Every structure is written in structure tokens, then in C-alpha cells.
Length: 383
Image (cartoon, rainbow, N blue to C red; front, side):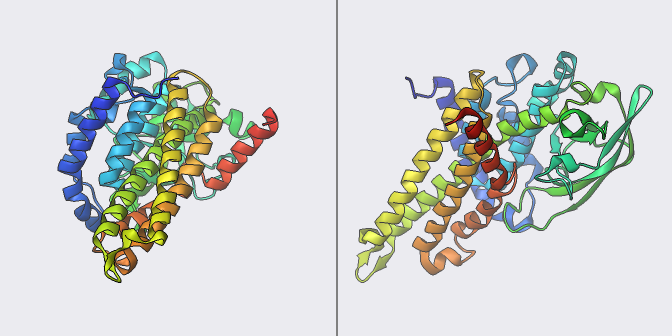
């Protein structure tokens, strides 16, 4: 068995790490304070090829697969979670919707612009009454000749405020349920009746835009339908499996950052005449976090390898999302404890990491849903 990264992936990691340290970190406080990511920062990531890292080469991407995308998420999140999440909304679940569900013509038509960053794309699945239960979706798409008319509303759409397109999932046959009655569409933001709501004022990941998208008699051509009519739910789930791996990498990067800050602080901070790193209480917290980070890393990259080699990984993706998000929350909680009162102060980045981490147990499918996915597979397989 070979657990080494390829030379290309190592070079990618080094490039993203340099970019994160040199460009992203200096902007992190501003991004959190202003609840906004400078557009030029997104353009710089596009110039580096990060927006198309997982898109196949024949469509203008780097063709570095899910492993490459996880490397980017891992390193970028160390600098700023909001920046990484914004990139992931486009590169992981937005563009991947076309990779997974698009026709050959649609891939040639749209993916080069997505890979270059000329156009950005968001993923619009969640509704106010249809988060964990997509079968309760109310957004509809009705056929009208060669067009479709879309009506409805999507909520909690990451980067929906800056996206040029959104992948919208809508009911096309209410009698067939989610498995056969939902279809996906690539909807241009410039469409008449496409309304972008206000940005949510969130606890954490404040720099990433999170908006409501409303569709009021939005008319689009059938050429913007992704996949077969009624097969949108299959596309959505296939994309979310990939998104959960990328989120696992986000959690890993955030946990690495929290641990590095904890180690540095524990060595410098003195109590009772000695660095607190000399006390067993601190050492055990650092040891527990190091162990969980190692487990996170193993889960993320082994599962990304399964994806890249064409093997089934739905169960593993759910495990990655479940374990990594909960382990991250434990790691950042220990980091705050190690920092003591300073960990509770906005002057220290660890306070922001604590806020950023909490939502990872909610989006990309709540952890309760991940447990259901894993449990059903365990009962089916018998192990």
C-alpha cells in the first residue's frame, strides 16, 4: 500500500500554503470584520488555478481530482475558513454538479469558464422546509415548450450573492417523489425573476456570503437542464458526497490551525513559574487533538482516493463529514481551553475558529443525517 501524495499534489500543497500564508492570512481579520471577501482575492485564486483544480483537464481544469481539491481545502482553511468555503461552494458542489450531471455538450460549454473563474456557480438545494428532508422541496419547474418556468425559493445558499449561475433543484413531477420527480437546472443569475436576498448575519464563517435565492417565473431553456428529467436527486446526492469530502478537508485544516496555535501558546504561556506545556493537563489535551487530527487526515484522504479511483465512497463520505466535523469541534474547544481567558477574546484567532467550526455539524447534511446514511449501509452490508 502506498500512502504518499503524488509529486503534483505535493507541489499543489506547497503553492496553496504559500498563497495562504502570504495573501489570505493578512486579510483574515478584515474578512471576518467586514463580512466580505475581496473579489480580487477570488480572482487571485482563479489565476492560481484553484477554482478548477478538480475539473478534468479536457474542460480546462487541473484534473487533480478530489484529492487535489481536498489538499486545497486543507491548506486554505488554515488561513481563513470563509475563503475556503467560498471556493468550495464553486469548485466542490457548484461546478461538480455539471461534472456529475451535465451532458458532454454542457461540460464543454460551461466548465472552462468555471475552471478559469470567469464565471462562478453556486449550489441551490436547501429550502426553508426542506433541509434534511429534500423530499419536501416546494420549488417547481414546469415545462413550457422548449423552456422551463421555475418558481420557488432556496435558502442558506453559500456564495449565492456572487455567483453567475446557480444549480437549482426543482420538482418536475410531484407524484414521483424525490427519487424520480426532481430535476436539476443551471440557472443564470441574470435571468428575469432571479432575486438575490440579503446576506445572513452568521455566528461564524462571516466572510462567506449566505443568501436566499428566489425564483419568480424564471424562464430558462431546456439546454440548461442538467441530466435527465427526474434524475436531479441522484445528481444532488452524488455531488454532496464529494462536498462532504471537501468539508472534511476544511475541518482538517481548521483543526491543524487550532492545534498549531495551541502548541505555540502552551510553550510561551507560563503558570506557577513554568510553561503550561509542562503540565500533564495541557499535554493530554494536545495529545488528544493530535490523535483526532491524524484520524481526520486518514479518513479524508483515503476517501478522496476512493473517489478518484472510481470506487464507491458514499458511506465513507458520510463518515468523513460526521467524524471530521465533530472532531474539529472538540479540537477547537480544547484550543480555547488551553488559551484560557485569551481564547475567549476576539483578539485571538482561536475565538474565530471556535465560531467557524460550529456550523460544520449542520451544513452538507446534518450529522444526524450522516448517522442515518451510515447506519442504513451497515444494516444492509451486515458490518
